[in-house]
Image 1 (tube, rainbow, N blue to C red):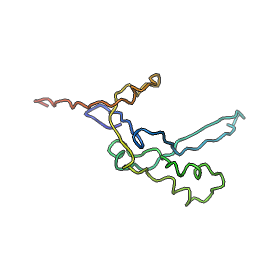
Image 2: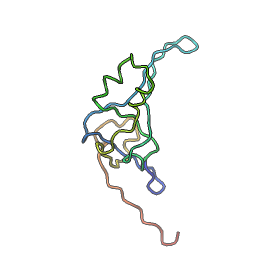
Image 3: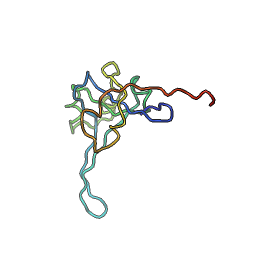
Image 4: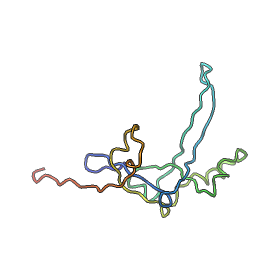
Length: 128
């Protein structure tokens, strides 16, 4: 979210004009100290690209579709090869725009959450 005055402004970012895309993530099944089996996951982040940097200091690792198979290959153990997946996605293939605060509530799960809005800058006080 970007700062707009004293408020944080949410943004929507798209890849290839709204096409589906994938984040690089890790998933694991493990046992906690009490022996309970847990399934956990995380989305990996990287430094922001030119589009996302004005909004945040990091971004999710977005995978190019041509790299899906490689990311999912359990035989890749070379850290240099894995590092190639973790670079910021090409900003030229992305679009970003401000959205309303409706997106901040988990109970809201509909297209309106990603509807573009126009940011209206509040006029400063004459005497501030």
